Image (cartoon, rainbow, N blue to C red; front, top):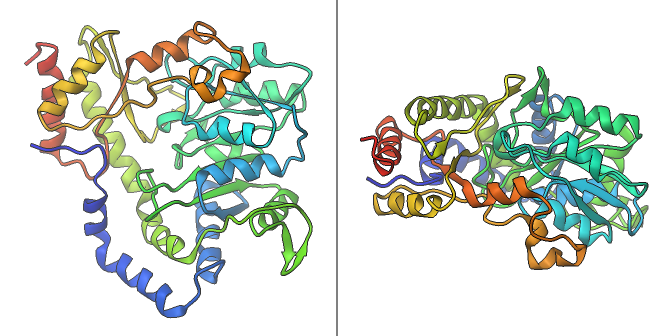
Length: 371
């Protein structure tokens, strides 16, 4: 049996007629830029996420970039974030001449540890950028308290966390700016790159809408130095078809995760992911920990049985060559380093069939001699 980590063909097949019609309608209209269809999707997505504004962009990376650009930061200003994340989180900080300052993670959730955030703060800190990794939110009650005491804005990287909540509040409710990615394999994925910024701040929303169109408030009049980062009409059409299914897809991910929890608990050398009671988890990834020295063997064993898996992420950013200039060394962030050696993500997509799910669990159990 073959089991993919994501099955975009199956998702498309289930929605084919509606998606084809939506894309063909855009092609027939000749309106490919910031059209009425884009505006309708922005409004619908913002409503689902509990935000006043949703500003569509051409990637989740640009959502992070424009969020920082909107804050009028200066070169050398420090942004506290996590080293255990996709590179885009730190990349945009560095691209703007700002300084990424890393803080270690909570070993249970893989998210940034509020106590480590406090230790990372300096007089040059200008913002905190937590990442809500794998579909579970960081400890935002504590992080927002820390930021509020120091009058620091919070940018929430929710690329993997659409549909999440924390203490009953939506992911966008906890940050001044919240960024989404609609990369095809995300819980809500486009047919290519796309992203969004969510905010309740009217002035920031207006500024970001200018920044995404070369800094212009109206054609050929430039208020800011901006860039070209527009959500196009075809991607908005695809996302508009998929958005009504998001809650059901996230619930299917939770069912698959609950099945794995039951089947994989109590295995010596493997730790299933932990969901904090205050969080609604959407399981963008179902990420287990495997005892050091056995993770790669398990992955190879699964591959031999046709089961795909992923390592997110194989190396913490502070040890990557591109960020060596920051001066960090091995051992500076032990929890992030340990996670990079132990994590393995299993298929949890909503299209996962029961027989596939059972096969994945049996295969993992077989590796550990439990079958």
